[in-house]
Structure formats: C-alpha cells, structure tokens
Length: 316
Ligand code: TUI
Image 1 (cartoon, rainbow, N blue to C red):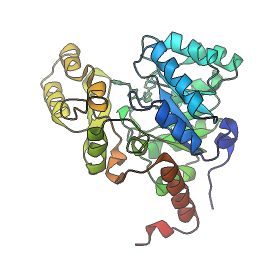
Image 2 (image 1 turned 30 degrees about the horizontal axis):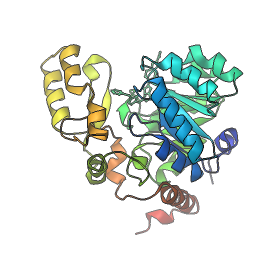
Image 3 (image 1 turned 135 degrees about the vertical axis):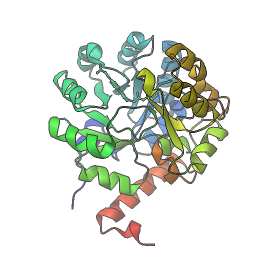
C-alpha cells in the first residue's frame, strides 16, 4: 500500500496533507483561516492586490487562527517586492509563489525562517528552485484553473518527483480522495486543491461564481491566451467565446487584454459570470456540493483512506 509520506505535514506543522491553493480575489483570510483551522494549510492569495491589502488579510488570518497559514505571491504583481518583505515583517510561516521565478527573494525568506514553496509547471523550474533553497515545490498540471503550463498533472508530478529530492505537492485535477490517492501513487507528499475550496461556505466568492462551478460539466472549461503566451483556464462563457474568436482571427495582445482586464474581480466580486473571468480547474465537473472546509477536508481524508484500503469508494 502506497501512502503519502509525512514530509509536508512535518515541514509545515499541519495535520492533513491538504493545501488550499492561492487563488487571486478568492483566497482571502476567511477561507485560509478556515482551512488551517480544519487541519490543512490555508493560503491567502496576493493576486494583483497592493501590499497594504495583503497585509490586512494576513492580520485578519492571525486573529482567526493560531495554526500555520501561507501567502501566495503572484510574481507579476507590481508590488511583489514589497509583499515579499511584508511576509518577513509579519512572520508569515509559509510562502508559495506563482507565475514566475522567486529566486531573488529566497535568501531573505530563508534567513527569516519562512518556508518557501514555489509553484512550478516544469521540471526545469523545479530543479532551479531546489538549488535556490526551496523547502518543497507544488507541481501544478494544466488541469488547474487560472494561469497554467503545458504538462498534465499525471505527466508532470512523477517527472518532478524524479528530478528533485525536496517534497513535491501535486496540484491540478484533484478534488476527491481518489485524486489524493492517485497523487500519492505518483510520488507526491501532499496535494494542493483550488476549485474544490471555492464552493465552501467560508469562501467569499460571489454565489454566481460558486454556481458556475457546481453546475459545470467535464468539458466546460476553456483555455484562453495561448496565442499571447499566457494561457488561462476558466469556465466557458460569453467572455471566453469572444476571446477565442478574437484569438482565431489573429487579434493582437492589446485587443485581447481589453476583454480580460479586471475580469477576475468582475466574476468573483461582482458576480458577472457572463463577461468576467470564471477561473476554474477541469475538475469542476466533480465538484457538486457546498460544505464547510472542515467537512470537505474530513471527507477527502475519509475517501482517501477508503481507496487505500481496497477501493471502497468505487463501489456503487
Ligand atoms: O500562478 C498560477 N496561477 C494563476 S496566477 C493567476 S493571477 C491572474 N490574474 C489575472 C489574469 C491572469 C492571471 C491566476 N492563476 N499558477 C502557478 C503557475 N506558475 N502556473 C504556471 C506558472 C509558471 C509559468 C512560467 C511559473 C513560472 C514560469 O516561468 C518562470 C521562469 O522564469 O521560468
């Protein structure tokens, strides 16, 4: 029987090997603290927010939990340098990064005792991150929502596991105990999930956003932005339809950006799921009910154990 090892739970001082992904606009203090209180690792997403707003979320999370939590820095954020320093000032226990290479901050974070977990979409970046002193990496397959790489979770995770000695956290396409068991078979030490946490009661995303995920079928996500080198996965709607039409007609980056600028805020905060960006992973089709973070994590662990003990979860 193959089981997830305890390298990540030990490293992060958490009960369950389940990490909630840092989703811009969606992953705020309320969600992150609920996940941490339930025994996983909650993460506050900086997204494109200014430092002052991210710091406020960190302070809120500190009031809401005494368990470890993390901050995700989206490295294209113009405030990334400042947020990187704020993490040290506020003694945030864990930092994850996305959409870039965080090497220039590693020394500062390591010196301050912050656990550093870059999200990578390739073996090359995983190796580089290990050399730079990362404590672990999240290997994120292109089943994920938001900004994605080229490889699937099934192909990326074992290749990253073979290429590095630090623990690997699998992400992309995981939303139940079967997914966690599969990740353990590929050599992962933990999983990171995003889409499944969006529909939890503690997540403050707009009800329309949650409904889109709850009613999505297997084929309901689309990838836009491949032509401009910035692929983003989300639930198909009027915006993705128009975007893909423009892309096929050879529109330039400026024209395309007009369609997506502020689109995530529009969907998450205003509930405009027609013309906003409803970022979501391909696993949305498996996400069918709302529950608390505690209930979700308990269910995931129960299902995972059932699968390990002989596949009971598959019996109808
Ligand atoms: O970062 C993510 N996913 C994201 S970030 C995001 S914010 C956003 N907001 C509005 C529009 C578009 C995006 C939404 N989703 N995942 C981690 C991730 N990192 N996926 C892929 C990468 C990545 C890609 C290239 C990391 C590094 C990289 O190259 C760095 C290098 O220097 O080699």
